Amino acid sequence: MEEKNRPVRIGIYGTGNFARHTHIPNLKKLEDIQIVAACDVGVDNLKRVAEEFSIPRIYTDGHEMLKKEELDILYSTVPAFARTDVEAKAAAGGVHLFSEKPQATSMAVARRIDAAVCEGGVLSTVCFRERYRPLFQEARRILADKQIIHVRFQSPRGLPLRQADVPAGAEGNWQYQMDKAGGPAFDWGGHAVDYTRFMTGLDVVRAQAFYHHPEEYNKPLSCAFNLCLENGATMAMNFTSAGASPPPDEAPFTIFFEGGYLALWMYDRIEVNGETVHEAEEFNPWFAQDRIFVEAVRSGDGSGILNDYHDGLSSLAPVLAGWESARRGGELIELAAFMEA
Image (cartoon, rainbow, N blue to C red; front, side, top):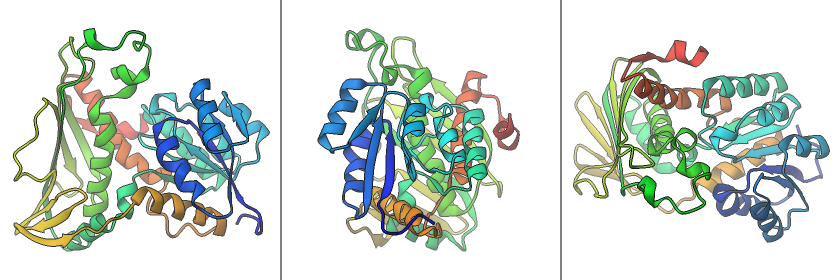
Protein backbone atom coordinates (compact mmCIF):
# COMPACT_ATOMS: atom_id res chain seq x y z
CA MET A 1 0.00 0.00 0.00
CA GLU A 2 1.23 3.46 -0.83
CA GLU A 3 2.12 5.84 1.99
CA LYS A 4 -0.82 7.90 3.10
CA ASN A 5 -0.91 11.68 3.04
CA ARG A 6 1.27 12.05 -0.01
CA PRO A 7 0.40 12.22 -3.70
CA VAL A 8 0.75 9.25 -6.03
CA ARG A 9 3.84 9.97 -8.13
CA ILE A 10 3.52 9.22 -11.84
CA GLY A 11 6.05 9.13 -14.66
CA ILE A 12 4.91 9.35 -18.28
CA TYR A 13 6.94 7.23 -20.69
CA GLY A 14 5.96 8.50 -24.14
CA THR A 15 4.30 11.88 -24.76
CA GLY A 16 2.45 11.19 -28.02
CA ASN A 17 -1.25 11.61 -28.74
CA PHE A 18 -2.62 9.10 -26.21
CA ALA A 19 -0.62 10.67 -23.40
CA ARG A 20 -1.12 14.27 -24.39
CA HIS A 21 -4.82 14.20 -25.31
CA THR A 22 -6.15 11.48 -23.02
CA HIS A 23 -4.15 10.07 -20.12
CA ILE A 24 -2.42 13.21 -18.85
CA PRO A 25 -5.63 15.32 -18.94
CA ASN A 26 -7.45 12.48 -17.13
CA LEU A 27 -4.77 12.21 -14.47
CA LYS A 28 -4.80 15.97 -13.95
CA LYS A 29 -8.48 15.71 -12.96
CA LEU A 30 -7.65 13.39 -10.08
CA GLU A 31 -6.83 14.55 -6.58
CA ASP A 32 -3.56 13.79 -4.82
CA ILE A 33 -1.50 12.79 -7.83
CA GLN A 34 1.69 14.32 -9.18
CA ILE A 35 3.03 13.80 -12.68
CA VAL A 36 6.63 14.27 -11.63
CA ALA A 37 8.39 13.52 -14.92
CA ALA A 38 7.92 12.71 -18.58
CA CYS A 39 10.15 10.96 -21.09
CA ASP A 40 10.24 10.84 -24.88
CA VAL A 41 12.88 10.69 -27.59
CA GLY A 42 11.08 13.49 -29.46
CA VAL A 43 12.49 16.47 -27.63
CA ASP A 44 10.28 19.17 -29.15
CA ASN A 45 7.05 17.37 -28.36
CA LEU A 46 8.34 16.39 -24.93
CA LYS A 47 9.07 20.00 -24.03
CA ARG A 48 5.70 21.13 -25.39
CA VAL A 49 3.80 18.57 -23.30
CA ALA A 50 5.83 19.31 -20.17
CA GLU A 51 5.10 23.02 -20.50
CA GLU A 52 1.41 22.46 -21.29
CA PHE A 53 0.83 20.31 -18.21
CA SER A 54 3.43 21.79 -15.85
CA ILE A 55 5.48 18.60 -15.63
CA PRO A 56 8.64 19.60 -13.73
CA ARG A 57 11.28 17.24 -15.16
CA ILE A 58 11.86 15.72 -18.59
CA TYR A 59 14.06 12.92 -19.90
CA THR A 60 14.93 11.43 -23.26
CA ASP A 61 16.00 8.10 -21.73
CA GLY A 62 13.56 5.95 -19.79
CA HIS A 63 16.27 4.30 -17.72
CA GLU A 64 17.55 7.68 -16.57
CA MET A 65 14.04 8.67 -15.50
CA LEU A 66 13.68 5.47 -13.49
CA LYS A 67 17.08 6.00 -11.88
CA LYS A 68 16.48 9.61 -10.84
CA GLU A 69 12.76 9.62 -10.03
CA GLU A 70 10.91 7.90 -7.19
CA LEU A 71 7.78 6.71 -9.00
CA ASP A 72 4.67 4.91 -7.86
CA ILE A 73 3.28 4.40 -11.40
CA LEU A 74 4.85 4.28 -14.82
CA TYR A 75 2.43 5.13 -17.63
CA SER A 76 3.94 3.44 -20.68
CA THR A 77 2.51 5.07 -23.79
CA VAL A 78 5.42 4.64 -26.20
CA PRO A 79 4.70 2.79 -29.49
CA ALA A 80 4.71 -0.98 -29.25
CA PHE A 81 7.90 -1.41 -31.28
CA ALA A 82 9.77 0.82 -28.80
CA ARG A 83 8.98 -1.39 -25.79
CA THR A 84 12.24 -3.02 -24.73
CA ASP A 85 13.17 -3.23 -21.06
CA VAL A 86 12.11 0.05 -19.44
CA GLU A 87 8.74 -1.34 -18.33
CA ALA A 88 10.38 -4.52 -17.07
CA LYS A 89 12.95 -2.62 -15.02
CA ALA A 90 10.27 -0.38 -13.54
CA ALA A 91 7.99 -3.26 -12.56
CA ALA A 92 10.79 -5.39 -11.16
CA GLY A 93 11.75 -2.40 -9.02
CA GLY A 94 8.29 -2.05 -7.51
CA VAL A 95 6.75 0.56 -9.83
CA HIS A 96 3.14 -0.16 -10.79
CA LEU A 97 2.59 -0.40 -14.55
CA PHE A 98 -0.09 1.09 -16.80
CA SER A 99 0.54 -0.13 -20.36
CA GLU A 100 -1.08 1.27 -23.48
CA LYS A 101 -1.96 -1.32 -26.08
CA PRO A 102 -0.55 -2.94 -28.12
CA GLN A 103 1.95 -3.90 -25.42
CA ALA A 104 4.76 -5.09 -27.73
CA THR A 105 5.52 -6.32 -31.23
CA SER A 106 6.89 -9.64 -29.95
CA MET A 107 5.73 -12.11 -27.35
CA ALA A 108 9.29 -12.41 -26.03
CA VAL A 109 9.31 -8.75 -24.97
CA ALA A 110 5.79 -8.96 -23.53
CA ARG A 111 6.70 -12.09 -21.55
CA ARG A 112 9.76 -10.37 -20.06
CA ILE A 113 7.60 -7.48 -18.90
CA ASP A 114 5.02 -9.90 -17.52
CA ALA A 115 7.71 -11.77 -15.58
CA ALA A 116 8.95 -8.48 -14.14
CA VAL A 117 5.42 -7.55 -13.03
CA CYS A 118 5.25 -10.87 -11.17
CA GLU A 119 8.74 -10.42 -9.73
CA GLY A 120 7.99 -6.91 -8.47
CA GLY A 121 4.58 -7.84 -7.09
CA VAL A 122 3.10 -4.69 -8.61
CA LEU A 123 -0.33 -3.80 -9.89
CA SER A 124 -0.64 -3.63 -13.66
CA THR A 125 -3.16 -3.11 -16.43
CA VAL A 126 -3.34 -2.82 -20.21
CA CYS A 127 -5.49 -0.10 -21.76
CA PHE A 128 -8.35 -2.27 -22.98
CA ARG A 129 -10.60 0.49 -21.79
CA GLU A 130 -13.95 -0.73 -23.16
CA ARG A 131 -14.12 -3.36 -20.43
CA TYR A 132 -15.17 -0.46 -18.19
CA ARG A 133 -17.94 0.75 -20.52
CA PRO A 134 -21.43 -0.29 -19.29
CA LEU A 135 -22.39 -1.26 -22.86
CA PHE A 136 -19.73 -3.99 -23.02
CA GLN A 137 -20.51 -5.10 -19.47
CA GLU A 138 -24.17 -5.49 -20.40
CA ALA A 139 -23.21 -7.54 -23.47
CA ARG A 140 -21.12 -9.76 -21.19
CA ARG A 141 -24.13 -10.24 -18.90
CA ILE A 142 -26.44 -11.12 -21.79
CA LEU A 143 -23.99 -13.66 -23.19
CA ALA A 144 -23.14 -15.28 -19.85
CA ASP A 145 -25.45 -18.27 -20.36
CA LYS A 146 -25.17 -18.49 -24.15
CA GLN A 147 -23.35 -21.12 -26.19
CA ILE A 148 -21.15 -19.05 -28.50
CA ILE A 149 -20.92 -20.25 -32.12
CA HIS A 150 -19.20 -17.47 -34.07
CA VAL A 151 -17.90 -13.91 -33.62
CA ARG A 152 -17.63 -11.44 -36.48
CA PHE A 153 -15.76 -8.12 -36.30
CA GLN A 154 -15.35 -5.78 -39.24
CA SER A 155 -13.44 -2.53 -39.39
CA PRO A 156 -13.70 -0.52 -42.62
CA ARG A 157 -11.68 2.63 -43.23
CA GLY A 158 -10.29 4.85 -45.97
CA LEU A 159 -7.58 3.97 -48.43
CA PRO A 160 -4.06 4.10 -46.97
CA LEU A 161 -1.42 6.35 -48.50
CA ARG A 162 0.42 5.25 -51.57
CA GLN A 163 4.15 5.05 -50.99
CA ALA A 164 4.65 7.91 -53.43
CA ASP A 165 2.31 10.12 -51.36
CA VAL A 166 4.09 9.72 -48.01
CA PRO A 167 4.99 13.30 -47.00
CA ALA A 168 8.53 14.37 -47.74
CA GLY A 169 10.75 13.80 -44.73
CA ALA A 170 8.25 11.43 -43.10
CA GLU A 171 9.78 8.22 -44.42
CA GLY A 172 11.49 7.67 -41.07
CA ASN A 173 8.29 8.22 -39.07
CA TRP A 174 7.30 4.90 -37.49
CA GLN A 175 3.62 5.46 -38.29
CA TYR A 176 4.42 5.08 -42.00
CA GLN A 177 6.38 1.85 -41.51
CA MET A 178 4.38 -1.37 -41.59
CA ASP A 179 6.94 -3.36 -39.60
CA LYS A 180 6.60 -0.90 -36.70
CA ALA A 181 3.02 0.37 -36.94
CA GLY A 182 1.48 -2.96 -37.93
CA GLY A 183 -1.52 -1.51 -39.75
CA PRO A 184 -5.19 -1.49 -38.66
CA ALA A 185 -5.17 -5.16 -37.66
CA PHE A 186 -2.41 -4.58 -35.10
CA ASP A 187 -4.10 -1.52 -33.66
CA TRP A 188 -7.78 -2.53 -33.58
CA GLY A 189 -7.24 -6.29 -33.69
CA GLY A 190 -6.09 -6.31 -30.07
CA HIS A 191 -9.24 -4.46 -29.06
CA ALA A 192 -11.49 -6.84 -30.99
CA VAL A 193 -9.85 -9.90 -29.46
CA ASP A 194 -9.92 -8.48 -25.96
CA TYR A 195 -13.54 -7.40 -26.07
CA THR A 196 -14.51 -10.78 -27.49
CA ARG A 197 -12.67 -12.45 -24.61
CA PHE A 198 -14.35 -10.11 -22.13
CA MET A 199 -17.88 -10.52 -23.52
CA THR A 200 -17.77 -14.28 -24.12
CA GLY A 201 -15.30 -15.47 -21.48
CA LEU A 202 -13.48 -17.47 -24.17
CA ASP A 203 -9.81 -17.38 -25.15
CA VAL A 204 -8.39 -17.82 -28.64
CA VAL A 205 -6.50 -21.09 -29.16
CA ARG A 206 -5.57 -21.00 -32.89
CA ALA A 207 -4.95 -18.19 -35.37
CA GLN A 208 -4.55 -17.79 -39.11
CA ALA A 209 -4.45 -14.61 -41.20
CA PHE A 210 -3.98 -13.28 -44.70
CA TYR A 211 -2.91 -9.75 -45.67
CA HIS A 212 -3.48 -8.08 -49.04
CA HIS A 213 -0.70 -5.49 -49.26
CA PRO A 214 0.14 -4.18 -52.74
CA GLU A 215 3.64 -2.71 -52.81
CA GLU A 216 2.46 0.73 -53.86
CA TYR A 217 0.60 1.24 -50.55
CA ASN A 218 2.25 1.84 -47.19
CA LYS A 219 -0.39 -0.23 -45.32
CA PRO A 220 -2.45 -3.31 -46.29
CA LEU A 221 -5.70 -2.86 -48.17
CA SER A 222 -7.25 -5.77 -46.32
CA CYS A 223 -6.51 -8.23 -43.52
CA ALA A 224 -8.57 -11.35 -42.78
CA PHE A 225 -8.13 -13.22 -39.50
CA ASN A 226 -9.58 -16.67 -38.84
CA LEU A 227 -9.51 -17.55 -35.15
CA CYS A 228 -10.67 -20.54 -33.16
CA LEU A 229 -11.98 -20.07 -29.61
CA GLU A 230 -11.43 -22.56 -26.82
CA ASN A 231 -14.97 -23.99 -27.06
CA GLY A 232 -14.53 -24.67 -30.79
CA ALA A 233 -16.39 -21.55 -31.90
CA THR A 234 -14.95 -19.50 -34.77
CA MET A 235 -14.11 -15.82 -35.05
CA ALA A 236 -13.52 -13.71 -38.14
CA MET A 237 -11.87 -10.27 -38.04
CA ASN A 238 -11.76 -8.24 -41.24
CA PHE A 239 -9.93 -4.95 -41.69
CA THR A 240 -10.69 -3.37 -45.05
CA SER A 241 -9.14 -0.11 -46.25
CA ALA A 242 -11.18 0.48 -49.39
CA GLY A 243 -12.58 3.93 -48.66
CA ALA A 244 -16.20 2.80 -48.32
CA SER A 245 -18.40 1.89 -45.36
CA PRO A 246 -20.21 -1.44 -45.07
CA PRO A 247 -23.98 -1.66 -45.55
CA PRO A 248 -25.76 0.30 -42.80
CA ASP A 249 -27.57 -2.81 -41.54
CA GLU A 250 -24.34 -4.61 -40.57
CA ALA A 251 -23.09 -4.12 -37.02
CA PRO A 252 -19.32 -3.85 -36.47
CA PHE A 253 -19.48 -6.62 -33.84
CA THR A 254 -21.85 -9.60 -34.12
CA ILE A 255 -21.75 -12.56 -31.75
CA PHE A 256 -23.76 -15.59 -32.85
CA PHE A 257 -24.96 -18.10 -30.26
CA GLU A 258 -27.26 -21.11 -30.21
CA GLY A 259 -30.67 -19.56 -30.79
CA GLY A 260 -29.69 -16.15 -32.13
CA TYR A 261 -27.18 -13.35 -32.20
CA LEU A 262 -26.09 -10.24 -30.35
CA ALA A 263 -25.23 -7.22 -32.48
CA LEU A 264 -23.02 -4.61 -30.83
CA TRP A 265 -23.25 -1.26 -32.53
CA MET A 266 -20.03 -0.29 -30.80
CA TYR A 267 -20.69 2.59 -28.40
CA ASP A 268 -24.35 3.11 -29.33
CA ARG A 269 -26.60 0.12 -28.61
CA ILE A 270 -27.03 -3.64 -28.29
CA GLU A 271 -29.50 -5.64 -30.35
CA VAL A 272 -30.47 -9.25 -29.70
CA ASN A 273 -32.13 -11.00 -32.63
CA GLY A 274 -32.88 -7.63 -34.20
CA GLU A 275 -34.45 -6.04 -31.10
CA THR A 276 -32.72 -3.20 -29.25
CA VAL A 277 -32.19 -4.30 -25.65
CA HIS A 278 -29.75 -1.66 -24.42
CA GLU A 279 -29.00 1.91 -25.44
CA ALA A 280 -25.81 3.51 -24.21
CA GLU A 281 -25.52 6.66 -22.16
CA GLU A 282 -22.54 8.96 -22.40
CA PHE A 283 -19.52 7.40 -20.73
CA ASN A 284 -15.75 7.95 -20.80
CA PRO A 285 -14.00 4.57 -20.39
CA TRP A 286 -10.54 6.16 -20.69
CA PHE A 287 -11.16 8.26 -17.58
CA ALA A 288 -12.78 5.36 -15.73
CA GLN A 289 -9.75 3.12 -16.26
CA ASP A 290 -7.23 5.83 -15.37
CA ARG A 291 -9.14 6.70 -12.21
CA ILE A 292 -9.63 3.11 -11.09
CA PHE A 293 -5.98 2.21 -11.61
CA VAL A 294 -4.67 5.20 -9.67
CA GLU A 295 -7.13 4.51 -6.85
CA ALA A 296 -6.01 0.86 -6.78
CA VAL A 297 -2.38 1.91 -6.40
CA ARG A 298 -3.28 4.42 -3.71
CA SER A 299 -5.27 1.88 -1.68
CA GLY A 300 -3.31 -1.26 -2.50
CA ASP A 301 -6.59 -2.93 -3.52
CA GLY A 302 -6.55 -4.05 -7.14
CA SER A 303 -9.98 -5.71 -7.13
CA GLY A 304 -11.49 -2.99 -9.32
CA ILE A 305 -8.95 -3.48 -12.13
CA LEU A 306 -10.62 -5.48 -14.91
CA ASN A 307 -7.43 -6.83 -16.51
CA ASP A 308 -3.77 -7.08 -15.62
CA TYR A 309 -0.67 -7.33 -17.78
CA HIS A 310 -0.66 -11.13 -17.74
CA ASP A 311 -4.26 -11.33 -18.92
CA GLY A 312 -3.40 -8.87 -21.69
CA LEU A 313 -0.98 -11.39 -23.19
CA SER A 314 -3.98 -13.48 -24.26
CA SER A 315 -5.35 -10.53 -26.23
CA LEU A 316 -2.02 -9.58 -27.79
CA ALA A 317 -0.95 -13.07 -28.86
CA PRO A 318 -3.71 -13.81 -31.41
CA VAL A 319 -2.92 -10.60 -33.28
CA LEU A 320 0.83 -11.20 -33.32
CA ALA A 321 0.19 -14.82 -34.32
CA GLY A 322 -2.01 -13.65 -37.18
CA TRP A 323 0.67 -11.25 -38.34
CA GLU A 324 3.18 -14.10 -38.30
CA SER A 325 0.72 -16.44 -40.01
CA ALA A 326 0.35 -13.97 -42.88
CA ARG A 327 4.14 -13.85 -43.26
CA ARG A 328 4.08 -17.65 -43.54
CA GLY A 329 1.39 -17.66 -46.22
CA GLY A 330 -1.56 -18.33 -43.91
CA GLU A 331 -0.07 -21.07 -41.74
CA LEU A 332 -2.27 -22.10 -38.83
CA ILE A 333 -0.63 -21.20 -35.52
CA GLU A 334 -1.33 -22.80 -32.17
CA LEU A 335 -1.47 -20.04 -29.57
CA ALA A 336 -0.14 -22.05 -26.61
CA ALA A 337 3.14 -22.75 -28.38
CA PHE A 338 3.32 -19.29 -29.95
CA MET A 339 2.98 -17.55 -26.61
CA GLU A 340 5.98 -19.45 -25.25
CA ALA A 341 8.21 -19.25 -28.36
